[in-house]
Image (cartoon, rainbow, N blue to C red; front, top):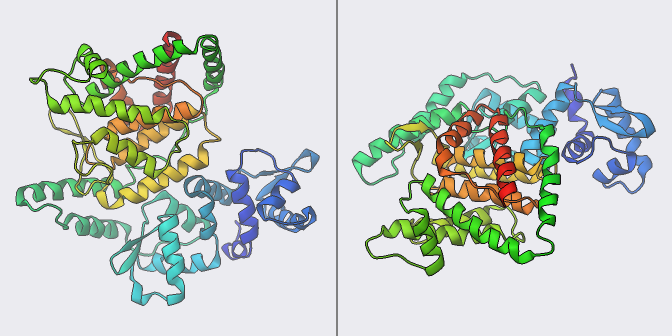
Length: 455
């Protein structure tokens, strides 16, 4: 076992490991690794590499290249944290961070005035960039239930000395006691739902990025070939793809809104999108949802956009225009996933922790967009977004729009989740919460193949 004290004197070496874990290569030459440390001369990298080799962090292979030693538990921790937090993970692997974490391992909640002033900036940076520590009014607390927290504590061989169950109970009790409505009956319902959401959150049940498995699919390799072949069909007649896209949009809007309970028929949707309105007796909200879906859909075909928080909020505003006065804002009240009868099917992230979950998801996306197949990337993002449920309403619509944005952004064709297949879609979404994303990806793969043939 590598002594954690030794690791404190390896900050530059760990920076190399983080750079390797975030890179797109399996093997790195000295020139590549010099760049990570911004070394002017390649020769300067060798002392660090020798040290990493001596501790079995990296392995030297033929032609003088290096690769990560995937059998080393400490390397596994670094890869995991880099995958979730990105380059900001560097802040975690310092002696100062170790000292801070040791304080919180003895006491999960510490008042700011009782913390050394010189540590406050570091704690704030850890809270903002990694979410391992959370701010709470005049104090901070450690998110001991998060897998990211467990990994960094494990890296430094730090053991938690407080009762985790008691602490989780106190967190649930605290947040469940905060009123967030002015109506006593509504507030009582909110307290119950907040308690359920908080218990699920503290059990890490709303977060799949730290438990993913089976995300490598050899069958996905042919997707790009299928896609490129389909694109060739439209080279000589670009107007044909325009007609196909317009027809696809109508089908998409009908199905995505229908999944959420919109009562309009396919013919009514076509009338709205073609002529701009329906007779007065029609459900105004249903009509508005259809018009809004078209506006939101137009945004995902603009590949100049990037997947950012601002873009996600822009999409949500488009879907909820003149429907939800808080469109584009994170939920302030608790919500959950229910069936048509109103029964709770699944909990969601508590309102207080939505921002940190979404920040982590966006970071995860940008760290993995060049490494994962777009269909896998879109599937994981879609599922995690639904589990968080960051907005009052419209979460499913936004999740499906982002799914297709990721495909389009990466040169793939979009797909439709059909309302007739809604129960299977929901079932596979819930199954993915175990971390086994493969059934959902296979489902999306079949949708893509079959719909590509008809495009």
